Image (cartoon, rainbow, N blue to C red):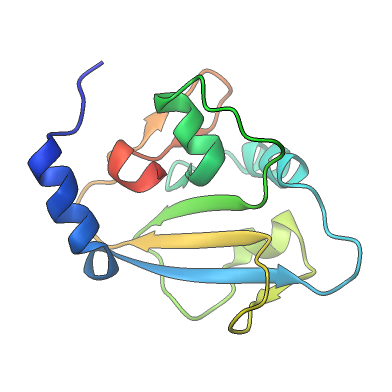
Length: 135
């Protein structure tokens, strides 16, 4: 597997706020669904403009990543709009609402606005974010 060039990686990290917009969503219902359940629902949507990032996405590039549990589901959306609750998110869990500052997030959306997504389809039917957006 080719790796992302180191100098480009550092440049991207330094400019990450300009490269993608991030929005968190919380579940105030008192019975939040585990990230794995949301991931299963995402798989059923069969969307190729949404990729898995965060801990679950990083495991594609670092299989030995050993964390206890999955604290949240990070998704990378290609060319979406920030500030609204996307319809697909309502289908994953209607209890999700935009998180307030300091509130724990159950799902985090990273919205990319670029010509190509660079997502790769994995063997489980989901898309994975590229290395620069999986972490």
